[in-house]
Image 1: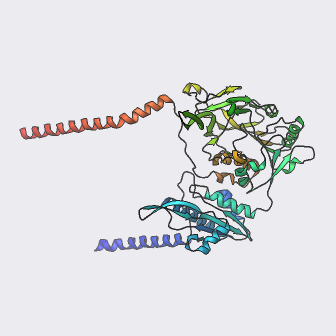
Image 2: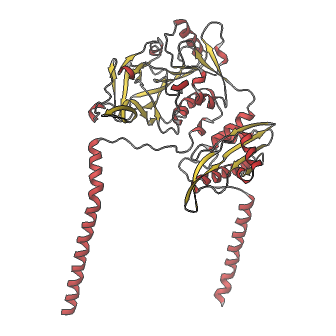
Image 3: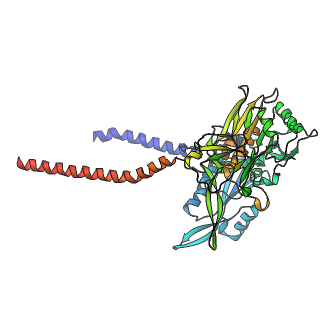
Amino acid sequence: MKSKKLLLPYFLLLGGVLILLNVLANRFFFRIDFTDDQRYTLSDATNQIINHLDDPVTVTAYFSQDLPPDVSRVRTDFKNLLQEFHSVSHGKVNYEFVAPNDNSDTEQQAVDAGIQPVVINVREKDQAVQKKAYLGAVIHYEGKSQVIPFLQPGSGMEYALASAIRKLTVKNKPEIGLIQGNGEPAKYEFPQVMQELNVLYNVRNVTLNDSVYLGKYKTLILDGPKDSIPPEQLKLLNTYLAQGGNLLVAFDRVDGQLERSRGVAINTGLETWLADKGIQVESSFVTDASCSTISLRQQSGLFSFSTQLQFPYLPIITTFANHPVTKGLEAVSLQFASPMKYTGDSTLTFIPLAKTSRMSGKQHTPVYFDIEHHWTDKDFPLSNEVVAGLLEGKITGPANARMIVISDGDFAVNGSGQSARQLPGDNINFFVNAVDWLSDDTGLIDLRTKGISSRPLAKIQDGKKSFLKYFNFLLPILLIIIYGVFRAQRKRWIRIKRMEDDYV
């Protein structure tokens, strides 16, 4: 009885602590994020955006109900994110959820707002049926609105929401110059890139001549020139860099002509201009065991069919520097890239941003493309060939300038007409990240690639592949045999022990 009386104060104290913790948890919102990519922790860029709001922001989320678990998780994650925005903004970010499928009026409201319905497969009463689902949101601020038409599972929700708010609240967007006049792709040939850049910048076409003032552009983009660049235009770029400008250069040093099964070098004068600054881009084709495929049309009797073949001239880059431009990138698909190296002195800083895999090579122009060539490990004697780099310092004058060079002028170009193509997300992220790092100081660059988009398997050699195959096959058999021998031996020991006890 006495021991129970002694324990009673401890139980009362424990109960009081639990009640206090419950009250504090209801009053103060916090959580600890143990995820690898910190996907449930708002970045400094997001905190900066929402802490500088002059007026309240209202988010109307249009999400269908009764969705499959893998899709309904999007709604849960987005709601958790909105709760975080609401808490950090001290109530300036408010939200509501609307189920468009409840009635025709709310559905029409979602469609009029710009939310795009998607068709998903669900099972009802042991039958597969298709349902129309809404997974989008509209952000309202000071009479203006911005639409997130579709939140894809696994996408960067924080970037989508933070950039939408940023787009509504930004007062004066910096100007980005897209250089034209030497065969470069037009602005409409970059729809994916422009969709991202237009969030924070005004992208203007610019022709390099004496009548244009380049100093008003935060960054200049020189992408994929096909014609020779006149020396006077290159002098203007030198002047721009001498004044502390930022330049993104993505250009082709080689041309892969698949219809002619050959590859040749391209000379525009840009390669010489870059070499004078210490960046030497070779007139060679990079090859990589980690690569994309091409379709080969084959005929068999009266039938024709397509076969997908690995084509090492289309490398998939998975090795990146630990740098904001490449942070979070998983795989960037290049086509007909060239190796580069820095030959300048230590007065400038050169950082290799992207490299080929451990099994790569290069072929000097001219090249004959043998589509049916059987590639082996011997075809990839090199490793970590640089295909993109960053140069920083006093490049052409007294002011510090920054320049990013990528040896493929087509990796972020969708094209136009029937030849237009949808590009991988990381291709766009790489290009836009480069512009952001050169131009923007908000930190949104860290959000675009936040989250794990893909985890490509590492390329391994044929010998190691065979070893792993037989090891995985034989190891379980060996373990079963060892266990069987051990168990038989153990039973034998037990039997001998029993016989000895009986004898005694």
